[in-house]
Length: 258
Image (cartoon, rainbow, N blue to C red; front, top):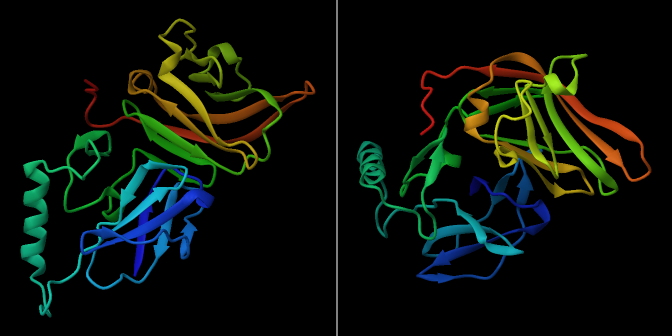
């Protein structure tokens, strides 16, 4: 069977175990591939007898896990009422059951409790989308921007992410974030708010995999189409732009963030 799940982990650290008859099986690492550069993983595995669930986790931090929401037919049952199953799933969603060990899940910035479905298994419109180097986001949403393939950045002394018009000064940027200093500029304002509203997290400095986060308080101030760039200052004093692309900010139908 094929499962596709999202999990913040490096491919080399992703493992899974089957739950069968109430007991977890042995750790497995075969049949795991990463979907592009995203923190999304494809698991190809044959369920054991009496399988109940598939757990996917980070072998370096087992608190970082997700489930594949595996389901099977009861013994002796050869058909299933799809309409009844869909109704039961929706009923469980509304009653607010939580996945064990979690505090709920988030769909497009809305906190919800999920039992019978998993966000990775349903079609949703992501708050962030990327086509090539074009990034499209919604103002007023929390942004998590995964970027991979920047190359080895282990010798950096600084790492910047900016959203700005071509040729404009850094001080005029829509967004300006530094790995150590956090968010320093919003719409040309260097006194907008605390630096914690934006961050750069390096996931793998050897391959150049990072994640950029921007709080909804800051994104709600933005609009329009412009460009993004990531730049590094190396230990030898040389500066290099690692990646660039277009950046499209759309306005949602709901502006509330609290």
